[in-house]
Image (tube, rainbow, N blue to C red):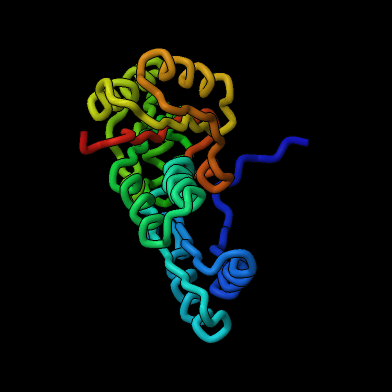
Length: 236
């Protein structure tokens, strides 16, 4: 069955009660909890987690809960969480786990190429008429994520956009060792091609493929591809 592409839909963040339940579940197996949320500029989840931490002071005595705003979303947020998880698995204490997450947070970059600007109005960031005109002109925006989603530039073709993404990565990474995640919104073939090029052209410690969340896919539109990355030792 075909469903018409919607102009808008409503979403709601997890509530403090939802976050508290998650903290309770984790506290059964660990005395320390680090909650890493999507950027506070993109969601109210961070505030809900902070409120839940206050509720947990009485309900979970002896459990230490820290909440971190990732300043990001989707694969880059996952990279921050993964760095924390790896540090915890190595037996590091909570301050060291937080430090590992903060290190990745400070260096991770995100670049996203929209296949069309037609859907961008649904995020509330540009008027619908502007997105319609841009779509007619085959304009493809390139966005970055640093706290909030930011417009970087525009291209007239996917090929130009991919080349721009790779050039922007190269300017930040050079020949250093890098962690990479390629992401997409219902464009697995294009994402796989981008993954193969990055594997061939960069010194990747790891590279993996992921999908946009439904909300991100809705705001960006199908065909979107992007990349998140950070240098292994940025101080070197």
